Structure formats: structure tokens, C-alpha cells
Amino acid sequence: MKVYLVGGAVRDRLLGLPVTDRDWTVVGGSPDELLAAGYRMVGRDFPVFIHPQTGEEYALARTERKTAPGYAGFSFHSAPDVTLEQDLARRDLTINAIAQDEAGSIVDPHGGQRDLAAKVLRHVSPAFAEDPVRILRLARFAARFGEFAVASETMALCRTMVASGEVDALVPERVWQELSRGLMEAHPPRLFEVLRDCGALARLLPEVDRLWGVPQRPEHHPEVDTGVHLMMVLQMSARLQASLPVRFACLCHDLGKGTTRPDEWPRHIGHEQRSVKLLRAVCDRLRVPVDCRELAEVVASEHGNIHRSGDLNATAVLRLLERCDALRRPQRFADALLACECDARGRLGLEESPYPQRERLLRALALAQVDTAALAADAAARGLDGPQIGAAIREARSKALADGLGDAG
Image (cartoon, rainbow, N blue to C red; front, side):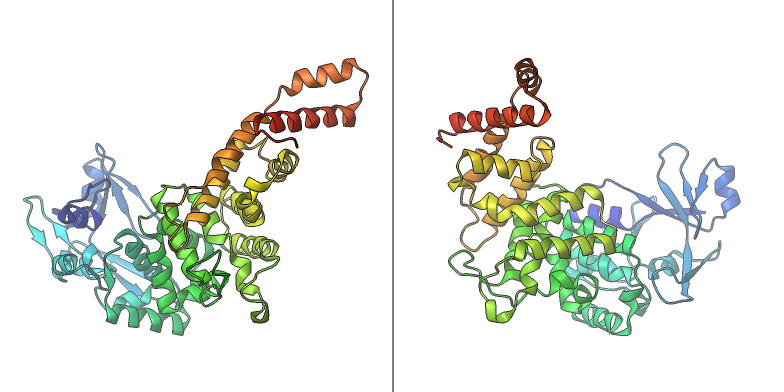
């Protein structure tokens, strides 16, 4: 029985990157041998064994065979006579099909080291086309390794997969899993560039795909094209190390511009409400988590008002805070402001521009946090009822904002 370090750990070590997770392949072994050694077996489709001390995953070398359409239509064969080379041949990309033995020697039957040096993402074999998840993984690796190009033959294979309908068999949970991971990589625009290039974006996220070629007013958007702007916003979200909910809000903030009639270009009146409706459909379809969905709705509906908030007086600022439910959900409001900063700075030539709206509105939120218990008690002592107490609290907030923001209201 021989044990090999495989996949991402070997790839990242060769690239000089930190190795956080290690996966192992066992050649010449059996489940009984591993169980006898104290390993714990998990997994439904094929057995994976958990090391009793390190908790790392060990899988028996295996082959796979396509049995039905879609990403789940595979049968697996694992036996002591399956070789390491056979196991590596089933992997997606050459840079992920490299192994290292216990002595440190590299096993690289598919030229993964060559492609690492050339910065190329290339499929291992035609079997890549059997699993549509591999298109999403390819796009995600492009987002992780922003300088890597997709091999032309790999992109051609992806286009064939899209045309054959393989992508349509993807389940929502898996699509969201890969998209969310890709959004959190260092170069999220590359995720969408690859998906768009092969045609998968139009099938998975048509609301995003239709943004390219839609013009915007150049005085506000020097980059003009809405799709180009979206990619700049996503890259700014990575630069500012935004969370997943913020990055998803950035992705969805302008969806409504893709439904503006061409005779109305480059203005997009009412796109905010259309964006909310479209992103809700995306969230329903992909089963997006609640925190991502709720923040995206706030940003889509209010980003224009937040951008213009420097011109709002205290009364209007309070209304904005109330619409965003900022007083009850201050952290979500802070996230919305970060998404809006990404939007404002994700424009050609404005990447280094300040965004004072964020600081002003955070200050306004702090000013509006009045002592509601004391105000309510005072109002009740004066004989005021529920609605009147609420009005007194709101008046106090408005005054605090006017005083703190230097605004007469």
C-alpha cells in the first residue's frame, strides 16, 4: 500500500503558496486495511477515510464511468489494482492532477508542472466533458489564479458542453457553491469572463449575462458598458476584502439595467426596482442564503440614494436609515455602504476616489442611536400614547442628526 499527496496541496506547494488542506490517495490498499488501522469511513458515493490523528482525508485510488446526464451521473470503481495514473486521469485540470510520494518525488503524467509554469488551465482528458461542474470549477480557478489563461481546446470543450445541455443539469446548490467560492477569490471578474466566454453564464445567470453591451451615461460611468462596470465593481470588492454578502450585493446591484429598453439608453430610470425583482428570482433559483439575499435587496433598491446622500438633509437621511432598517441592523447597513463604495469606485478612472458618503452615513447612524427607553418613559409620563411616543423618538433622532450633521433639517 502506497500513499500519495494529491491535488491542490501539491499544486500550491509547487507555486510557493500556503498549503491549508491536504488530500491523500491510497494505492494498493483496501477499506478493510484502512479500517483496521483506525481510519473512519465517510461518504456515500465512494468511500473516503479520515485519518485517526490528523483528520485529513484519504481516498482509495479509483476510476469513474459516466452513467447518466448531469454532474451526479457517475459510477466509481475502487480496487487495489487501480493505479495512481488511472486515478489522476479522472481529475479535471492538469494542474490538479499532480501527486507527490512519501519521499517527495513528483508524479505528473499529464504535464501539470508545465502548465503551472506556462500559467495555463487545461483539461486532463476528454472525460472533462462528462461533468458540467467542471466548467464552474474551471471558472473558479481562473478567479483564483488571475494570470492563468484557459487553453483554447479547453474553452472549446466547455462550449460544446454548454451546447449539448450538460450545464442545464446542474442543481442549484452546486451552482451556488461554486459561484460563491469564485466570488471570494482574488480575481472574481475572471469567474464571469470564463463562464460568459463559453456560453454558460447565459444559461446559469442570464440576468448578469445581458448586462454586457448595455450603455450607461458617460458622465457617471466613463467605462460606459454596464457589464464592464460590473466587473470593475467586483474587482473593487475583492480589493477591499469584502465579505460574500457584500460581493453578492455588488453582483446584483444593477441587474435592472439589463431590462431597460434600448430606446431609453443610456438612462436607466427605475432600474433599482427592476434589479430587486430580478435578484429575488436569482436567489429563489439558486437558493441563495438569506444574509446575501437581504443585503443585496437593500443595495439594489437604495444604492442611488446612498450615492446622493451627501446632498440630503437630516430629515431625508433619517428616512434613508429607516428604509434600510439601519437602526435595527447596523452591521448590515455598514455592509451596504461598503457595497456602494465598491460601486462608486468600480468606474474607469475613479478607482482611487474617496467615498465620503460612507463616513457621513455611518456618523448619521451613530447620531440616530438615541436613548429610546428614556424618551419613551418621558413621553409616557406626559400622557402620550404609542404612536405619539414613536413620533417623539423620531423627532429626537431627527434633531440629533440635524445637530450632528450641521444641518438645519
